[in-house]
View 1 (tube, rainbow, N blue to C red):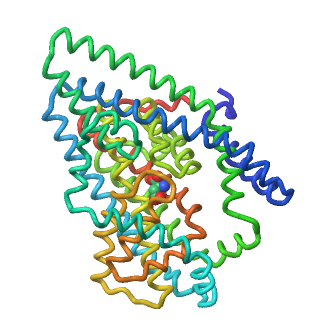
View 2: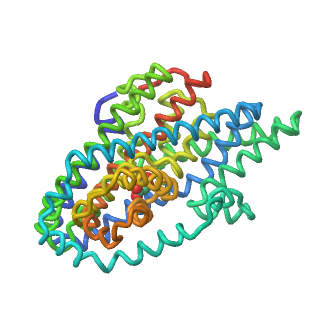
View 3: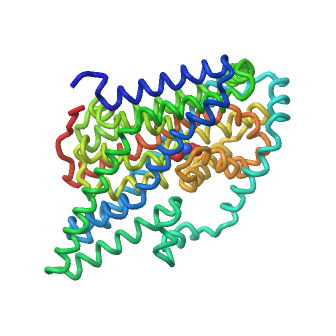
Length: 433
Ligand code: ASP
């Protein structure tokens, strides 16, 4: 196959051309044209992915559970999944804390810039604090209570209820296993066929990926730059060390933690892994949404990484909602950065508190753009750093969101490989494209 026909190259080309278009549009005054006629292509693309996510999770998980044929295996896999998710998240936060304490980006931020940033973004903060407070007001077990839906249609009507869908699918799968016989066989065949249909639809949607990514990047640049590209670049410069600390932390996490995870559980090479899931990573980067990327992550993990679908369809939807290594690492860096910039020295106890609260905050963050910064409020509150400090990092958050989302979905895929391998359900990787 010619290189430019390969999906990841097409997405990269779309991404680069989108950025170029965004720059040209800024200089040539084509911002309105881009927002009116190009941005909708990106919006439609994301909507299509989100549209297929619920049916995909439901159908593939029912197929997965029924093919396991054994509920003890299911609960063992569940325990493993949650355990590895928790461990990788704690590593991510620790790496974030070490990086930010070494680089100390908050100390290099000039006080004038700090005051200016606080003034510019102060209005936006209160909305975000309110959303986070709502989450904080919930009881400790509300998270578990919310996994059980009281109405099937309601659960399927809101994509942020992905765990409810997971719950229903497992229940349905167990029901089918337990009735057994001819009727069960009919249902298994039905879900199997439906699964193939949904996968085919994902493939069709992916035909739009290069154009969708082009449109997303073009409009992103316009949104980021606002009316003044020069000012946006100035902001990036002022917050350069902070961005660098986040990016260095994310890179270390991917190359050290996931590589070690593979060493410990399978003989998957990092290179093979990246080659197989590249399109999903690029899509995570351009959509900034784990939930929207889920259909593609599932497809790549099953088809290209060789993870059996009973594992992928179980581990990935849970991961897209609760496992966010990139987000938790970023929250640790951001919290310490804000404290440093405001002249507050955090004690060891406060930094350990970050490990706990950033874990909870990343679990609570939805897989949508900007969810991580809303949940950051919880982390800041826990260490008594003023939440108004979020104003300092808001201007570059959209950019960092792209990188942390990419790491979030990479983490989900890595854990699915680890779980599959230890369960003997990891086949050959297929790097056909
Ligand atoms: N955008 C991220 C995701 O979808 C969440 C975040 O804002 O950190 O995974």
